[in-house]
Length: 224
Image (tube, rainbow, N blue to C red; front, side, top):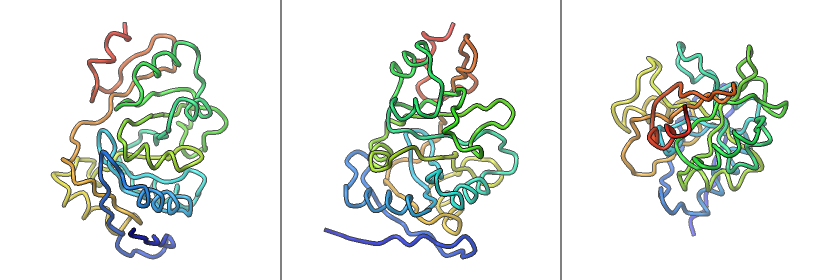
């Protein structure tokens, strides 16, 4: 069995990231365990989700969270997103009434971001400062689920874009953009996602779709 130790860099050192290949549909346990351990020590990771690639970290690691926010393109003012393993984890970080619970249970796991009122458990750097909103996802990708299963809580994430705000043309451009800015790059050897998650605003009694993306057809019956 391959064993490796992933070093977490001090924020002032700009060494190249460690590349790790992990199977998308059947992630190797020893690899996801090591990545999860590195996240717990403050690593920032570039990883595939069931929509776009994302940069992610453990929100309890303040230095990692500060680094992650600096990776967002300058014009991207959208709040960071919490990746949660399941509804029980999500309910710690967002206020879920019966309607919200039923909708999320119907759609998740999947490529959806739910915009909700955050609880006090959400780090202030993740909340929308004016409205105290938080974006939550329960990803369906087995690799994401494997990482989250190792953690006692969520990951904070942001879509991996170029500093221009554009989506990368391919893996080579994406990895080159981030290899001096993150600690770990996970390559699942799958096609690069080009469509973002569908975002559903659930902060008012009348839910609305504020970004059309993957899985849109499954959401429309719930939105009047």
